[in-house]
Length: 191
Length: 185
Image (tube, rainbow over all chains, first blue to last red; front, side, top):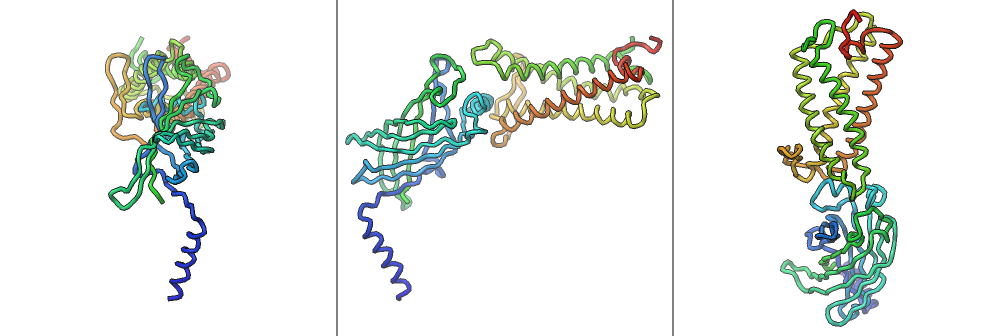
């Protein structure tokens, strides 16, 4: 009896000692309920879309204190996929992402500012092509709740844009194609 | 002028195959390096690869035809004055050149078909992709292509330098034979 009682007591004591425990979520990349999509104008005449197939991340979110939310995402830049092998090869080359040298991109949040209407502003540091710069992401809180398999899920969509040149990518795609838009669909499974 | 090879000389067909291959190999190597350095707004940004693929596929057909012709009309005997090690070295280099040619063309094919898209042969028809591809195939095949093509050009230069050495130093018919000069020249 004593053997099982002691660990349980310690666990209970630890819980009691941390009254506000933010809920930790793992981004569901294994079930692919998350995606990192980009779009950039082609010549100024249309949108070219693509995505990063491999990434991982976590976030914490407490409904009672959403302003304390944190998120970090690591992207495998070699997993770029725009549904065209020759273009992907070019974008991965030293002309653009130089993935041999910079195989990872990263976003780490520094602040989360809820607007109280289901939207929020997420601030953080984005590292791409070896350059780290502040980035602001407009967030929509999509939903949260129990899933049918005994888990608990929470999801967001974020959008942002940045100039390629800000990250040292200066290949000339034309005046209409200097900015990339990012759309992040994130679903986390509570740990 | 004979079309077929004789025991001592190359015929017109073998010589044509040889020089067209040489021209295509060096031309495709230069075109490949140049076209991948072009900027997006260059008028050759799309045209360069279009020619590179078309000429490459033509070269593949040419090399297959060349090997068939080689069966049908075997090359002339080695020149008498060539030492045994020179004959072996020449054989090895010729074999290596054929091997590299096929490997280079295969790796080029694997870049453009990595996403399952066919390769257009000029605007005439398309070469289908394989039904499977490996991860990052276009990048891996691209790196391999550059290395193999550089090796091919390196070995071809070695092959040419050997022929020039035979012509000017050994003063034998190695190069003259491939230029189609007859024995009594």
